[in-house]
Image (cartoon, rainbow, N blue to C red; front, side, top):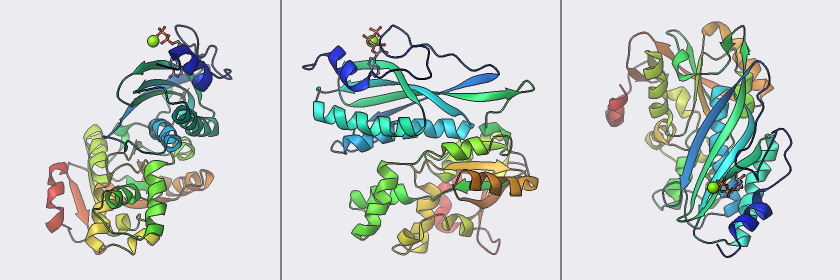
Length: 325
Ligand code: ADP
Ligand code: MG
């Protein structure tokens, strides 16, 4: 690269370490897990054309690349510690790198998560981040939130709002017509998602299972049901309420529901908790300053049922979701 691989790393990605024992510069970084904790590790790759548009604002891309990884830590109830960054770049564009690093480190600093290493190479734009987080072990039991912990009778919840990111994507692709103001709101959700780290931490010891919503509510719920060996009933009226009101008014009922149930890239948390934990869930929501809504329940047996506000089965145009049943 014109700038030089090592100059580039020094200039844009090397910073003094804070929590790590050793950061950027040697063959390995060194992390010292706190006594009585386990390390939670997750890796996500973002590829141009597949996960973002080629002309996306690099600062927003830096944010999103880390945000989708922090979202996985949130879903496990893990506290962010550190991350590595593997970067393939077509060329060393200094303005691009400066903006990318700015967006990346703004979010990293907000979560006290430090960059401890990585790899830099020439190639088609590709960003791969691995995050490391910490989960306490109490009385020999991991406090990590897993997909496999849902039990029949548990309530099903989702955080924040759903469908905004897909709405923005469809509008940007010219497949959906929404006013500029509404698109601006939705676009922030698509390009700069908020990982629900505080909520994930607050739900430790309360939620029975959790997953972050990257592929869409029904698909990701399917992962929880498979891992837990359960079924679920989703109240579509409650779920439809998860689309932001200022966006929902531009859409028909069917479109709304399809965005909420099948739209991806929301990076909200989907989680379950026993009915006896309703007050605790509300407490966690307040502590994390993140709204949560109850949208269904976990059933014995298998299968995913959709019902309307009166409890009647919802089918018809949602037949395409049958492969989750
Ligand atoms: P090695 O050849 O041992 O893999 P490199 O020469 O690729 O090491 O990298 C030198 C140092 O810079 C290592 O500590 C590595 O972790 C770090 N590094 C390389 N690329 C990045 C990056 N994009 N962000 C942060 N650290 C990086
Ligand atoms: Mg290397």
